Length: 283
Image 1: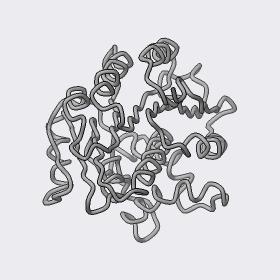
Image 2 (image 1 turned 60 degrees about the vertical axis):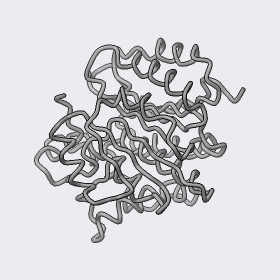
Image 3 (image 1 turned 30 degrees about the horizontal axis):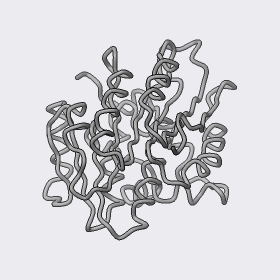
């Protein structure tokens, strides 16, 4: 309950997560049929990078600050175009002050037939989130524990959708909760696209986490990771990971191009690395 994403908004972890989210939404928009984005740990949806909190850490300077408005290689620009369009829409003067969280990115990319469901447990953040989406008939905000929402809100009535799970990882056992939550939700909605975020840091039980995911026997499960520095000399975040279940058939190839670029551009030391591999391929 003490976590505040404003201290981390726009950092390297957000870049990976939000770039992938935008690609997933773009893929679903290739068909006219409506879909729903379910964001289980939504935060407040929009962040002021000039605020005291954001300025205190300045993490966005080593994330989106190194990318937005900069020349991009021809192979990379299309992979970031929708993501960058949402940032540009909030910063018409070209200078980054407002950074969109995943709810705002999703909303800016939705069509009129698509819907957005947002869950946030923290009372103050839930109220801010509701205010940020007031009178928006395509968006529903619920003050609810995201772990409950992950199972209770699937399948959506559209039968197509993305379930984004981005917990704060404040408590012990969050990696196990992520695995258990995915298993329960997938059994109810096996056709959904699941995008699960997790932190990479010293002492994180990644090996056991990956084994538990593999043991779920869910097909088409992709592991994406970006580490920007060694975890040896820090207790903080050294990298960021995403598990994508039912990824678009193009995503792995796109990440073959994007992840090396992000590693080079966002690296904070020589230990920067990336992973793009199947935990389980298509059955």
